[in-house]
Image (tube, rainbow, N blue to C red):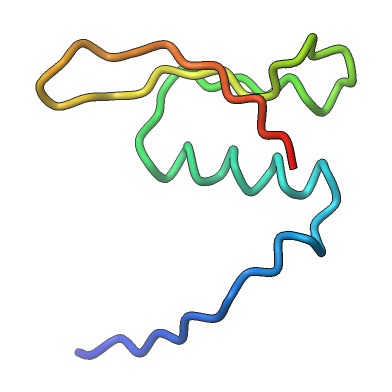
Length: 70
């Protein structure tokens, strides 16, 4: 079975702030990050939008803050 896939450019300038944050959060989920928390949607995020644990193969996992600014 062959899967056909069309890749099209993403126009980031068309995304609202919350849509962009949602895209970044979804990317982190698909990339295997764990313990993800999305603060940007509440408005009181104190400069952090997404916090999670980034896995590494040969190094200890790393807790990371992603400001997701546009």
